[in-house]
Image 1 (tube, each protein chain N blue to C red):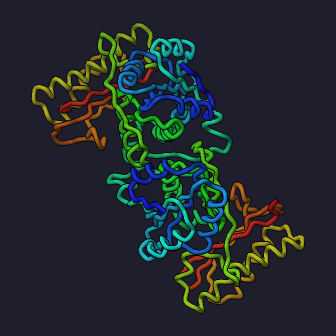
Image 2 (cartoon, rainbow over the protein chains, first blue to last red):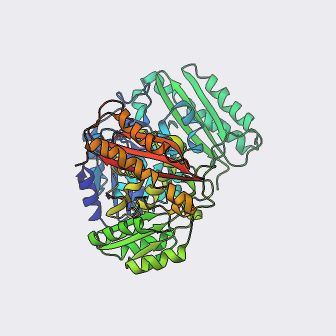
Image 3 (cartoon, rainbow over the protein chains, first blue to last red):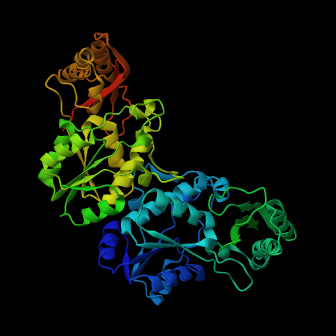
Length: 279
Length: 279
């Protein structure tokens, strides 16, 4: 595993790697979710790179940029075990030089859901992803379905900017009790950790209602709310039944839908989602 | 000279050309100003490409997108004569697919001067330039100083997005009587054509005052206004003395400055500029 920090290094190293080259962009503090992306990339690509960069521009001023968990040494050992070819830990001062003022925005897909509660978040995501993709020009980029809206924004961005890269969505990896893997799960104390399963329980309740024939978007949202209200430690920020392509909130009957939610458990903000009617 | 329309073609053809590859992005209806960029590129690069695309997203709803002069056949003959390697005439439907919603913005540099009078103009410019540069990955891109703010925006964009391309600014090419070459000069009737020299006369008057020791930004603007007021067919939109790097309007004494102006002559909007204190 080669390690690059500067853009010059990473471009040079990537040049020497066999195509197709797969990139797994991450913010580090890796877990099995990230590793599932890495393994999928390994199985499909001639060479694989992982980037680790806690991108400051996708955090709001009230968010957890400072506290975001970091452990690059542990990450490096994990990636070494996975036998990836290239680790890139970009330098913020190179990606955001003094006087920085250029932004990539994906307009309507960035408005609802996470975008409505995290102002500027997807502008930061779209900008950093554009920079990562143009720097190393992967043939495939692997993104997790855990951040469903982010995956959708990246897919649109790649299409709109005509970037020659295939976006590969990877399924959510869950703990045995259903909690979606997330670096932010590290914030949870044991009691909160138990309560945090309510996100998956709420999604499952709605998905079961869907499986039993329920198609009303309102009824599906209600199913999720009911479950969330049963967990006193959970404070719901939003619950959504949206079109999986446009992310527009749905009000009538749905065939295919992205069910998603954002919930505070203690001070930790968690998100999760499931698509019903897929395939 | 090879001609490409689709992205797949242009990527493929560019791949076969020797480095360094120089790109001259244009909106066509070529004149000696464009050709000076082409010749400079030819003299410095292993291969040269020219793009011709009247980019709809940089025109405002009240602007001249429909009327913008076009003559691709004549352009092709001129470029054939210059012995360029690659002509790219992108297809709008490929660059802006249905549902298009991704924009590149360069914030503060896009606000003053042209940006203040052409809302959304530099968003369109920054977006198309990002697309052209990421599609063909030139080693150098040649831009004309006639569009001084555009050149500054492109330079900042390339720096901020870490695009591995050198931005080469090329001097304004003028008609014998001083009028800056522009595709829009074709709009002028003979009387307007004569009046249009007032832009250069105004800039020259201010530059001469600067050469004689005048450093006051207000005094330099006044020099330009005086000359413009002497031409009854000219209607001034703005006159500016700005910092050449930040494009901020200057109010105190200046050492180095971008003098620029936008003037209607009849219905035709013309711009011109000169940098004083350079070098």
